[in-house]
Length: 387
Image 1: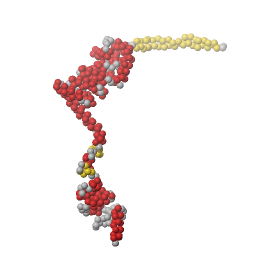
Image 2: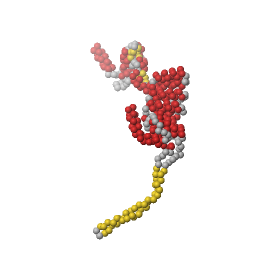
Image 3: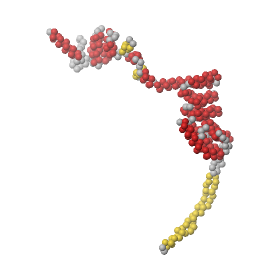
Image 4: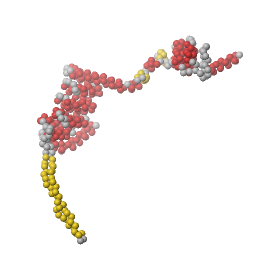
């Protein structure tokens, strides 16, 4: 009889190992290959008492059956009875951190992870993912500080001006470019002068567009000169071209200011721009010729050859021309050259050359024809060395 009981117990253990679910008392036994009904599983879960082992086994059974929500409830029953039940805690995703059982978001935060864009990241991953926006925010904050110090300089109160200059001298150069470009359009004149000088000291080519505009449109001559000197300090060979194109403006004031800026810029290519514009507006154009003629052809003679018993006469054709050849020179155009504009061109060339060849554009044209190639070659060599 004892052998029969032992055999029966072993058979029951084998059935449990095969994954067959035993029903609670009063429930319908599950047939082979059939999952137990959820209602039956919930009744078994509700019937659990204070037996942590039974609850843990039921949790394993429910997890194997794929009923994860009920399995979680079974494991929770386990830790209600035995709070430090290691297997149940792990099944629920808990880990022990500094003497506390933590799971979910608390566990991730305790382990040093940060949630960003819907996922948990390590501190290094978070720093890399947020670097662009963080750097942009830091850059905006630095620019705001620079604007505040520029506002102190704009007050023209000696103490505030000195404090603002000291702070700006210590500021990050990358944070100064934008605020200084804005300051070029602000009052008073002293602020614009300071902004132009600072942009020249920064030496950042990105400041060139703002400087080029103020070199033409700033109402103060001193600021325009400071802006042109800042452009020269930047050493950008392309800066001469926008100023050269400004010489073709319909506004005389723009043309005059462009010539002055080219003089301050000191670029050898400015000679060509200024001389061309001076010639075009002064009426000193080259002389040209055109002919109005009539042409008449006639037989002038015959070239006779003897071939055996025959004579061959080839006619010699002559041409007569009559008409008029006229020399023309344009003395003036619809545009006139005022004294102010002539003085601007003359002054610009005199400042560029360091000598005065007079107020006749012919002398300057002769100078450029003789020295232009050499000056342009020196310009190219200088910019190549700076690169």
